[in-house]
Amino acid sequence: MHYLIYTLVDWGIIYFFVGSRFLRLWQTALIGLGITIVADYFGMKYNLYYYTKGIIHIGNQPVFALVNAFANCIIYLNWLPQAWGKRILYTVCASTLFLAVEAAMFSVGAIQYPNWELWYSYFLLNSGLLLMVYLADLLKVLPKNRL
Image 1: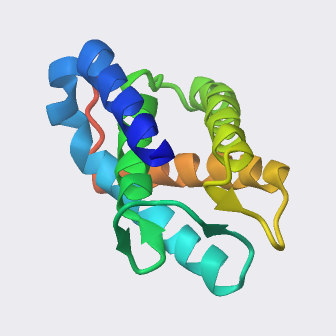
Image 2: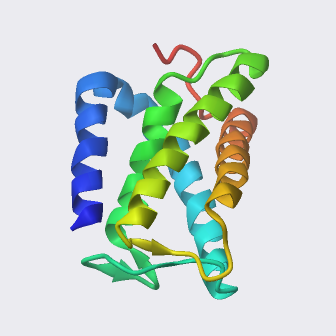
């Protein structure tokens, strides 16, 4: 149920704030989703963390957690600055917000950390988001004029 509420909030933000720019951002968000799947695969394989709640699962990952990862990438990309210096600062701020959401999901029991600490996720979020943008620039799928 928690993932469903989180999904509705994410897609509501996309509907109201991203709008038609979604069509220019979804390809880059797929790169972010791929990074998330790989990170979660290894995180669960090595028993660092796991997901406890979810309606439908693919492997050990709740489908709505994957949908939320995709949505979070779109939200992140919507306001991404052009200059790399500003991107890094923006990523630090965005990761803080995403970490707050993860902390809320942890507090309701949707994520468990047998061998992980919440603050580790901050560095994983930063590196994952920056890797997504770097790969998108490299593959030339990141739109130049997002706003």
